[in-house]
Amino acid sequence: MFTPVDTSLGALLLYQGSSGLLQHNGRVFGISSLLSGSVAKPSRDNVPIIAGLVSSILPVYFFAPSLLPTYPPLGSSWEAALATLGTGFVVGWGTKNENGCTSGHMLCGLSRLSPRSTIATGIFFLTALITANIRNAFPACPGGKPCCLPVYPTSRETAFMAAAVVLAQLTNTILVPRLLSKTKTSTTIYNFISGVQFGLGLLISGMASPAKVLGFFSWFDWSKLDPSLALVMLFGVGPNLLSWLKMKREYGNEKGKKPPTLADRFQLSTATVADIDWRFVAGGIAFGIGWGMCGVCPGPGLLRTVLQPTWGVYWMGGYMLGSLLGL
Image (cartoon, rainbow, N blue to C red; front, side, top):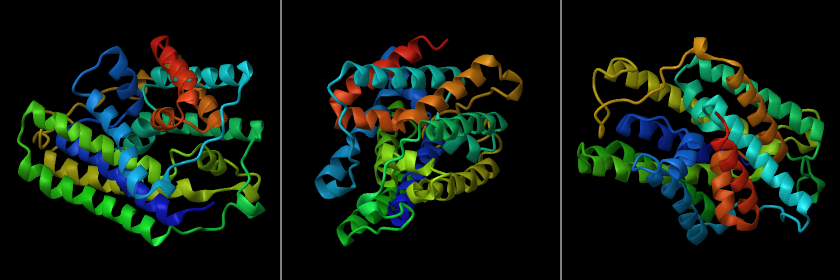
């Protein structure tokens, strides 16, 4: 069902986690590279963020468990297991070759007005839309009601979500600049904090729910269309764009005349449209196919792996294999 309040507040947390990582540590919140890097080349730049993402489950579990997504069972057949492994592999291979996913290209790349990320987003989004509609396995909403009808959170859920947004904003704008100095320890601490904020955003916004993602792709069957994730563009990408424009004025340019709050320099991709090759295009198509089939991209895939380990063994195994063989 359409969740305007939940998704809007969750999108603000996605914005706070991603913009905070750029402003304070000078890095783009690209989950696909962070996830594969934490296994292939673990470091203080990726492991704390992944740990923060996983840890974001805990406050939701203890204070607002109804906000945790529900998942369909994996099924006991080998066909189901192989299909799950296969979609994980396609997503891993695709994001590796496209050098990003929904977080790095769509949330962070579009907000930085990157032509390369705009092309990447167009490729994987259009492919996912086509794939989901060809597959035509959109979940029906409870009671047979149209999925576009809005539902609203309880007072307890609202209080938890609002508190998370306010605390994230206070942390990023007041506590981090005042309490953390420009050291490697500080960047490690904030890596974890940004991971928690982003993970909460995935859970609250509905991005971690495959049913909501697939429902958003139901453009030709309006009874199953869930428009919630359009609000991620409004309240996630929009504020990120404003933050980026403000940051460019204050910090000079992408190379940074003024360094980030906690790090020595910005670490932004220097790749341009001229660097797009067949691997980039094929990767975007592959990622779109995998995303359109299962409604799961790397960040939500990590959270689902923790919440549903029987599914995660196959999907995450396939994802890591695809990432390893991606180049």
